Each structure stands twice: as C-alpha cells, then as structure tokens.
Amino acid sequence: MDNKVALITGSATGLGKRTAIDLAKNGIDIVLNYVHSAEAAKETARFISETYGVRSIAVQADISLFEDVQKLVSRALSAMGSIDILIHNAGPFIKKRKKLSDYTVEEWNSMVNGNLSSVFYLSKEVIPIMRTKQWGRMITIGFDRVETAPAWKFRSAYAAAKTGAASLTKTLAIEEAENGITVNMVCPGDIRGEYKEMKIKNVRDQSDINNPIGRPGTGEDIARVISFLCNEDSDFITGSVIPVTGGKDVLNKHL
Image (tube, rainbow, N blue to C red; front, side):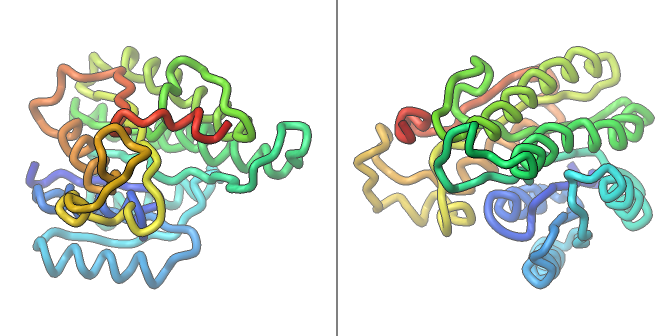
C-alpha cells in the first residue's frame, strides 16, 4: 500500500485517529481532518510521520459545508498529489435523548448535513480523482443494523441521516465498480471515550458483562476492519455494511 494517500475526516482524536495510525502502519500517507481540535490534529500528524515514516498533514474543514470540502480536497491534493482512500469518519451526534418533535431545525440540518450531505460532497470531489487511477477505496461509518432502516428511539435525525448514507454507500459501490473503486460501510458497536483510541491488547483483561464477547470494544477493532477493506486484495468486497459490535444489541440499549 506504499504511495497511497488516505483522507480521514474527523481524525484528530478517537476512532479517526486510531484508523489513521493503523493505515500509516501499512505505509499509507495520511491527511487528517479536524474542525476545532487543531493542536490534537497537528500532534497526531507529527506522531504518525515520526513513528511510521509516512507523510501526514492536518487540514481544518467542516465537511458539512461544500465550500470547506472543496478546500480540504484541494489542500490534500496540493500536499500529497492524490487521494486514493477516503474514510468518512466525521459525523455529528447529539447526545441528549429527545424525540423528533423536540429537535430544532438547526439540529436537524446539522445531523443531515454532517452525516449524509457530507458523503455526497466528498464523493463528488474525490471520485473523479480515483477514476483517473482506476482505483479507490471509500469507507463510510454507520451504526448497528443501519441497512435495515431500523427505528432508533431518541436518535431520529442521526439514524435517518446514517440510513440514507447506507443506501448511498451501496449505490456508489454499484456505480463505481467499473472504475476500480470499492465503497463499504463499517458499523461500530458501543465504543466510547478513551476506548476509541485503545488497542485490543489494552482490554483483553477487562470484562464487559453487557457484551456477548465479554470485553469492551476498541478503536483498533474498527480500524482493523477498515484497513482490511482498504487493502489491494479486498477489491471483491464492495457495497457491504459490516457490523463490528461484539454481538451487542446497540439499538435496544437506548430504548
């Protein structure tokens, strides 16, 4: 995977950071994206470059805005010369539990633009670049059973946007298969806080009675699947929605 460039949105911290590190281990140059976490993003970029010997930069952009996406892609191309892998990791989420009727218009637009429209914006800018090489990997992020359009109480806006993104993922996979571009969705389980940046070995001795596997999930659990999908020989996997939950029923936990 040398000479490949990955653009990962929302990658200053959390799952995006863990994914960036795992891809860098495979010799992939990394474009980190952030909105507010400038220092964390720059530190992650420095760590990646110094530890794995690949190029890494941090670029500020709000992917819910098309103009920012254009600037992000332009900066990535100027610095790296290509974008071969696109990881749609960033996506706003409202933690407060409330019914649809209690959402403001601004909150609704934030959820839809950040989790669905952003996929369109980035795809519109990046797919033409991938087509020129007849090669590309695109990964979106969903949630447990998103492909079935499930009800998710108190998460209506987020669930609706991600469900749309799942459909878009499958459509893009069909449309771009002839161009050597694969498009898949990875659906993390209930991985929170510091666990998003942890390695699997850090939790081997920890117990989680709420998960059938018996241990907490980590960012590395997600990053390993993403890295596999980005591999040269994973080209037969496209249009897939892959849960990485440890068997946990994520939706019913929130009812």
